[in-house]
Image (tube, rainbow, N blue to C red; front, side, top):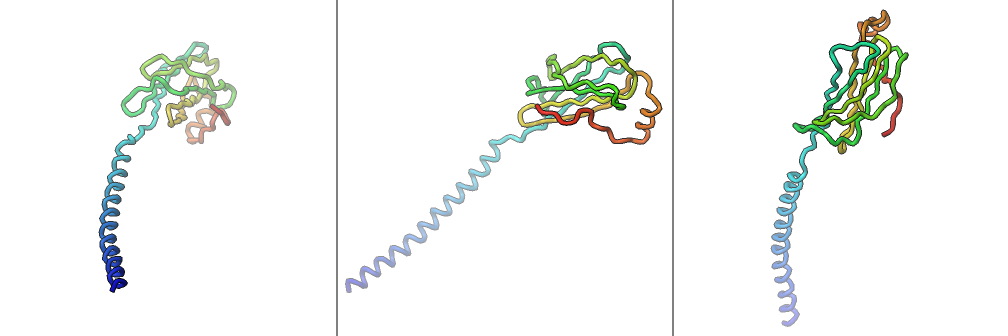
Length: 169
C-alpha cells in the first residue's frame, strides 16, 4: 500500500503544480505586455530636422550676399546643430564655392556671405545635422540675367547636377 500512497501523492502534487505554473505564466505574460506598452510611451517620436533656405529677393554681382537657413525640429528652432555647411555653385560649372561652415546668428538661423562675381543660374545646398537627423536641401537662384543655355536648362526642366561630388563630415 505504501507504493500506491506515494504514487498517489506524487500524482496529486503534479496536478497541483500545473494550475500554479499556468497561473504564474499568465501573470508574467500580462506583465510583459504592460512593459512593452510602457516602453513605447517612454520613447518620444523624433521630429525630422527641417530647413528653410533664405535667399535675398534682389541679388547682384560683386556684393556680399548673405545666405541663410533656419533650422527647426518640430516646433523648436535648432540653435545647436552638429554642423551647418553651405555649398554654392553656378549651373554651368564656371563658379564653385567649396563647402563652408555657416555662422550661427541665433534663433535657429545660420548664415554665410558670398560675393558672386558673375550673373546666371546658381544653386545652394545646405548640409546640416542635429542629433540623428541629417538633411541636404538644395535651392536654385538667379543673379542678374540668364544666358541662353541657362534659360533652356530651366525650360527643359533639366535634372540639377549636384555641384559637389562626395563630402565627408
